[in-house]
Length: 517
Image 1 (spheres, rainbow, N blue to C red):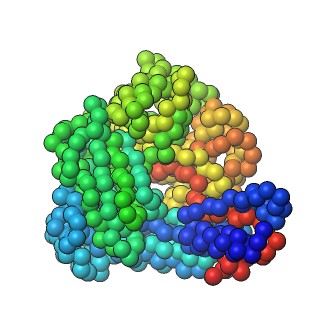
Image 2: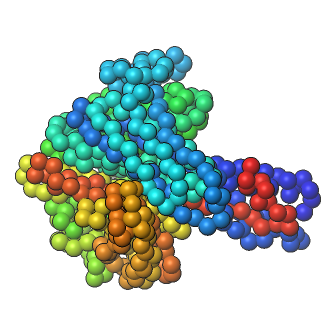
Image 3: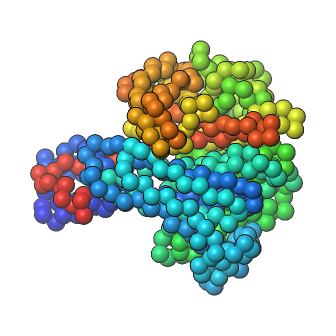
């Protein structure tokens, strides 16, 4: 391999390790033996973005930052969350802003300047891997946050945003894991029905403006609108866009497609229901022929599946519930037919029937890529609360969930293809305690709500880290629950791979010096 080629590989590899968003496979040049099997090294930088938590004056939000201990990292590092500006409908001078953006009330900026809300942003200052750090905020003026972690605090960095709203539209427990910026997102399970107030939150972490298109798809296909085209999100700014301003159609089940023309953003949907409370809807896993939606609460009183086929081809899917005893077929819902370019909703009722469960979708004769999510309801009558479970990627190498407590957290593990052994580590508490770990064996085709370890002498909240040890792929989800005015409030976060490592090709040249730059 010549020196120019080697330098190019080294440069790209260093970039991959610094950004944490790229992986590089070693090239296989004919007759060359210098490129070897790729190794995985810890990333050197991670970006996370947390959406504006609530417009309710009685909202109480907790942020929990956590980085798991990783081998091969430097002892030093830095992580911080800074406030984003909040745009309104007329907040941009170039291009157009979403017409559903919030007005400049509450001290929020309407022209891209600093806002009063920024002075009220919570201060979260992580110090060491292995120990969570928390911060609280109250009211409606808490802005979106833009986070950066470097060095030893970057690999696997996760931030949990958990909000309690005791009354009003969308009351309940709203939770989301702050997400990484990207260029495309799919959200199945949104709605423009009269009973729902759904916003898509767009946050731009970069120094230049991002241009975004938002497309909505209902039961009959694309809900055509020009309002969602060419939305400009200013640098270091966040914009919440009300979905009902993008279309006149009132659809109970809507799929939202966010695509970025230039730049990158983080995106999340906040779904607020007049009667069923509210929660965050995270993006679905990438379109695929087979999907897993893990962690349905065992006491769910109603489960609704929403599926969308992005292409022109129809999809025929087999529906299975991975229960503690194996995969079963829900009575009356053995299959679901999804027309190409259209959103399909299916009521599954109390499909778990008192047991832990995860939904497994697999193709019929011909695999067709789809995206999917579940809306899950707990409680009865006027004491109901809802949450969402999107299709998830597997845990992969490692995943973490922050903001746990011994009595209010439930960890669900699913092994849809074959028996798997998993290690679960409970970190030290945010205010004290000693980490603990335990291994579990999950039989193929089952879901187990495991008795997760608790740190000894724990004070405050702690994180749970899941690491597959052997066997087939594992999917995981964590549920937080509490009771608000008699309502069984809850939120569920899936646990895909934390992308804490990046593939680096082994060569005859030592590239470690580049990874430290």
